[in-house]
Image (cartoon, rainbow, N blue to C red; front, side, top):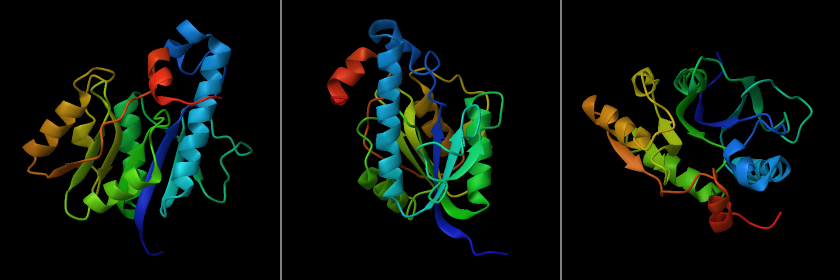
Length: 200
């Protein structure tokens, strides 16, 4: 059996198709601009991920793309599995933690993400059971752990402003310890992009 990696980085991406990504952005900026912004965010996420020394697991929302901008030499490509976001994340962590001692998941729509945030999050896992990167909207853009924890994902009402808070409460209820990465903004609305984005 091959030796376990120390770290796995899970990245969730949506297949970048016009009309199917950043729909809230599209309502004010149009579908073409929303797609362009999402592609810019994907490029930023990809560059950041490539700077992290870890097993990189890329999970596509709909269909694995072999010949896209994510090189197969640097990213192991898979398809998300599960009926909701919680099931999909639980499955991804199961897959990662079979192969690594610690795993962190990051979303692909955080303009301010950088390699040092992920490195600090992995470092936090050496002294804590979990790490959460809270988003300004009450969700989280980053979550890390050292053992599969399906209880964090079950019966969660996603896309509310309580997700990070409830996740923290569930960790503490099990006696786990939690560290925090900086609070950052998702890019969901035109205002988010104006504050945190860049010229594309």
